[in-house]
Length: 86
Image (cartoon, rainbow, N blue to C red):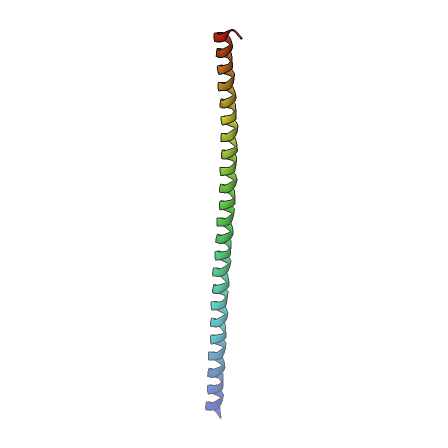
């Protein structure tokens, strides 16, 4: 009887130990998944910021081109008026 009780206790201990290990592994998997999700969010945010920065640069470049074009047009008109006396 004492031997059976010891076997039952040992079996219960092993089952509890296995359950703790399953919980530990599950917690580790959940932690890794959260880390992957966070990394993915960070990468997406970086891509969004990069897209915004590139768009702003394109817009600034277009404004600059328009200003340069207007300046050149004004200079050419001025020379033409001076040269032709118009």
